[in-house]
Length: 295
Ligand code: PEP
Ligand code: MN
Image 1 (tube, rainbow, N blue to C red):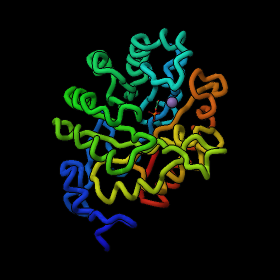
Image 2 (image 1 turned 30 degrees about the vertical axis):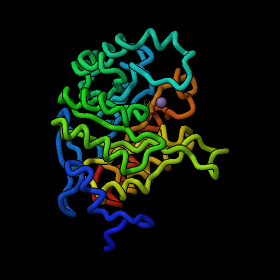
Image 3 (image 1 turned 90 degrees about the horizontal axis):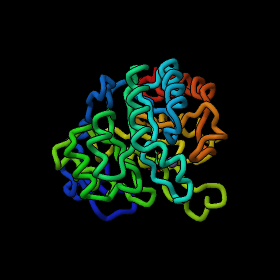
């Protein structure tokens, strides 16, 4: 095979030398590790599901209960949220630290591990006590001092790709985490800024080509978030299935019992019934395409 990426004049080997810890050492090199007893990079494709925002204790307990029934592997939910516009502050100010305590309660009651975002270094000690995975949101992908602080917690980390970032810069950011002694790193594609050809219909465009591209040069597991990538519920199912077919090692999906009334991004979550069907469908695609499984 040609050692250059299509249309690029840098060889894959030269590119990989910029991030030696993130780069594959040979063609079969693939990270496999467990987080809270769930294996990543193995046969099972773990599913992270839950609301965008930890809106209330009642909501998060209800979702956790349902996720368990649907055999989802992790509960997702933002307590510290990056909000594009600063005016929805009332509910936001009510969650934050309280949201973390609700996640803790859900984790204990339903025995489901947690992934949640941290945006500021000062909250790392609090959140690290509860979460199983620290989510670094797309907006912080290149906040290098913050990446180093997260790495030093020794907690597993999911690094979301910034919606304007190249694969090169994304892997460069991941290298900061590995270089600082933390190698339980998941990478998450969550949609890139839609080019003008798509702007009328989409805020973002899911970049599924980045899954095989990333897997050619890094051993780290690649997660896909079709909810943020499409920003539009009717497209989530097909893009979740396509994400599995593209080779994703995990899926993050927004789920809400009453999607239309979700406090943040109400256009993107699916409901419990849709989740239940999707779990079965993702399992079928995983088996058919890669001899892997979801359930
Ligand atoms: C999220 O997952 O809640 C989130 C804010 O995602 P992103 O950083 O990809 O926008
Ligand atoms: Mn969001």
